[in-house]
Length: 268
Ligand SMILES: [Mn+2]
Image (tube, rainbow, N blue to C red; front, side, top):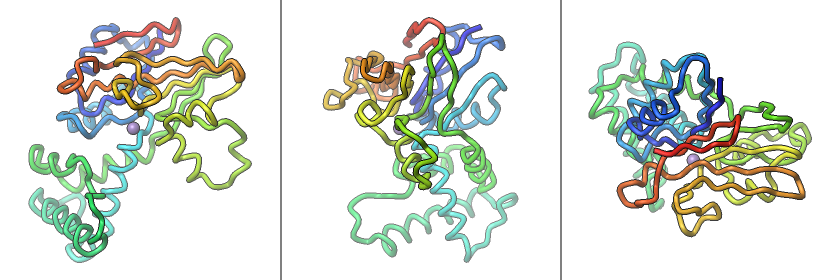
């Protein structure tokens, strides 16, 4: 059996299935997904459905895009005081109306001076409403599923403490600061800090979040997995987000999968 890690699928469901086929993923193996299943790509619905029904040998961690999706749903429920929709029986039309009134409220009443949208930034919920006729019950179920996702997974690989997380894992004693919000921001949004203030002694951090196809980013590696060894901490860093969702504009972009057992990398 082997342990595989993938990250930042971003609605590229077909590429995800191609990768599962390429690694011949079976019930004997384990798969750890490091977040950002939705947004940007066209198959967020397929990803949400797959995750919802995923087998027990798959560990689904949380990315910032899931966190934000759950927050949008929460906002819809909060602003639903007028319609008081029944999550189980509301029609797709009622949910669409609620969606548009939330969008209107935020744009014109709550943040009229803000330059860009802060609600459903990638239009994923709008697209789910239009194309899949989802209900409020679907949205609430997915938000609940997201709330159950862990921020990171820790395991031991060949004597090394291996941490899989969406963006970064901060060094230090978590109990020293009672403010989980600070840790959470690091798990979900860290970029170059994932290497400096991040890491763990005699360890290995496997993250995504920063596409290795973006030339101005620290992890730029022509769309290949970025690997960095910090001698001081004796810590190996991996960024496995090779930007598969940018394939239309970036020829080097691809989906990567890291096999933990021997650090072999697969690409589709
Ligand atoms: Mn991300």
